[in-house]
Amino acid sequence: MYDEVPRVELTAAAAGLLRRLHEAHGPLMFHQSGGCCDGSAPMCYPEGEFRTGGSDVLLAELDVAGVETPVTFWMSRSQYEVWAHTRLIVDVVEGRGSGFSLEAPEGVRFLIRSRVVGAE
Image 1: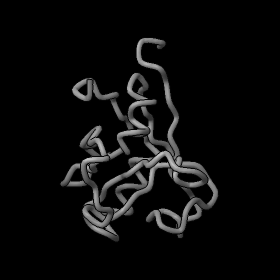
Image 2: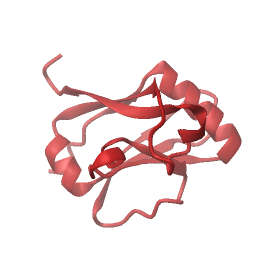
Image 3: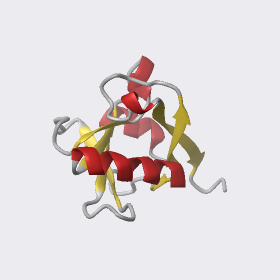
């Protein structure tokens, strides 16, 4: 079941922000928990700063032009079970998100746009 992971993509805006964040913080990772409030948005951390484990699924290692190391994208297993047949598109919008995600001081926040796989 978990071998069929949804594809994760980046918009051009998200890739540009990841390049800037990588310059400032080094290798990066995303985690999406599916919790309430900002927990439903993807959170960006320095790679390894957010501890993952058996309750998380690695969905993708995202290649970003100009960034030498892939950006890993993790999701809580419980959230993954709900979104297993969904294509996830990481985008950026204006406005502050959580104070824990690296982009918060930039005045923007990452968000997920989704599309059911096969409904394109």
